[in-house]
Length: 542
Image (cartoon, rainbow, N blue to C red; front, side, top):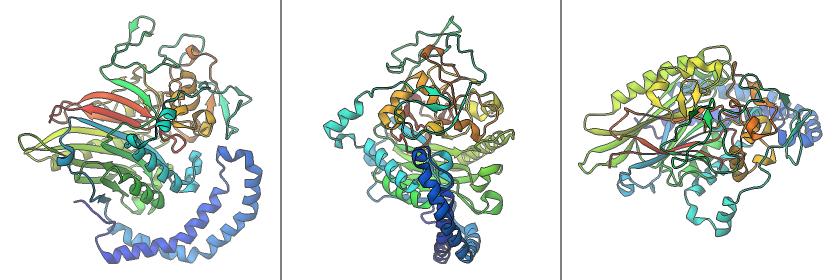
């Protein structure tokens, strides 16, 4: 069943709205109070002003929080009473949305997944981000603009294609970067552990300035100096804009309610069908706090959808109902009059699991849910065109501490075009998680600059996390390894922690999926700490 409102009962909707208004003064006071104790790296040049503001203004916010605590307690009680009756998600469709008959049953589709980090400001600041409401509007605006490229002026089109200068990362001295950088941060400078020694030639290297090799080009580098690297049958690129005619968008960490509303309103200009706020509220699931943060946007109508929360979570993830959102979309009709459908599952898994094996348990549940949803909703006279699994999995394919997760049977059921084998990625792969402490440096401040940085191995080593994780924790995003002076000296593990996936199931339909392009998109530079991942693929059904 597709739910078009948070509650089925008008009375429950009114009570829930009342609880929101009662909680608002206390929430704003607490959020403003906590923001004063966590500076962004871009705010460090004015840290003395922020410290003074915190000293004099924080007591006022603390007093307001105390004075409004009775209202907060009443609002929290109403929230706990109404939340168990809340629908598991909200589905909205635009009356102006094109129907599948108008679009036609295509043979080529594009899908993108991205973590947007739209958290309350007090939480987002731990990721070196803030102002989620503004970022939500800017994210939606940039995505929609990328789908309307013919509306850009010639000058803007020219400027977006210009190659920026100064592509090499700044050098570091005494733990602080040199050069014209906006938002310097006193992060930790460390040496990389593991990987090959710096004096050895790299196993994998990407050309610093030229395009990433496509299916028409072949890497001339070899593995261990003898085994040639096979060329791909699809292109793999770094783009400064999202693919044209983007069909599906899967987002994670869309938590803040105001930001969610603004994001949904903006995305509906291109995506006529959106599912947001999936979650289940209880003490055992999320401590009555945040929903799953998942969002699904589609140009095609949704026939069926289901949300399931993970039963295992630790640390900060106990406050969120992380899980999986499974969707069945209607793609059109074949020449024989049969309905063609596609299956898409998006998820956000445990972050910073540490020594606890939470991820394998969540992968077990994900396997069960996707199989069960497929069996219950497919139907006999329907053609399944594709089955896609995507999202933020919070583990990569190469880190030694995440071996159990990457070798899970689910990761073999779905095809990851970047994976050569369990524990080894293909030589051209690039990480998708930015180092949060270098987030505000001017070298990656625009989509074009970030794109140029991702095409340089030295810049990748500075701005992206390494795939050498043994114990995933917050410390790894607030330290910067020493960057070698030459491209050829960059370790193979540097900048290649790839935790955002778009995978397809090879036996997931009669569409005979063949990948046309895998791309990383930099259009959301400075708006999120993840690199969006896009997959364009062809099917045989028409």
